[in-house]
Image 1 (cartoon, rainbow, N blue to C red):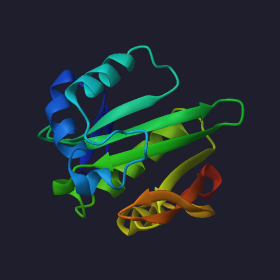
Image 2: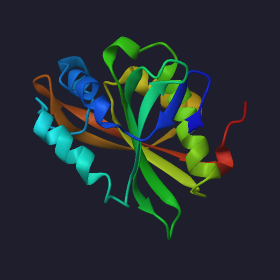
Image 3: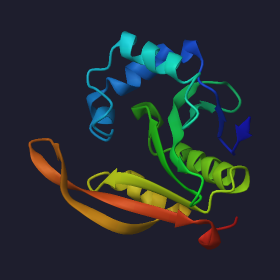
Image 4: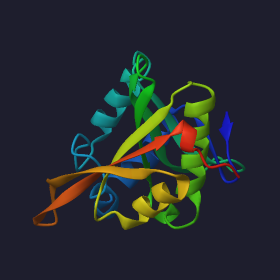
Length: 176
């Protein structure tokens, strides 16, 4: 298990599906998710995704849970792993009841430590919508920097918004 101060990251379990559906079908949560995740999200879609993870060697996905109680908080993953260049793309989401409690920061630290120390990746990238100020603050606190802006990339809430491309190099890693 990968453990932080608040969370542990573990493989997804079928028992997580009800919580996943509750969180991903919350319109406030879904507005921050990438377009590939449908809204509303059905049980059949989640079960198909869950079953596909057994064969998926291109990604490493984790459930984010309370390290003491096991309460499900959300999910995170390492995607698009480029072993030749030692880079990857990450993503993470939390259910709304778990926002602004330090859970995202703790999760990001645990995930980045795993990527740098166990996977030997040298650069982590992510994409985030410019209106997701809470997440951007968390990423910057960890050491991520804005590397580019995709202008008017996503249509949400009746208008187009920019998407930020952020990166974090192992050589710039912050230590506690």
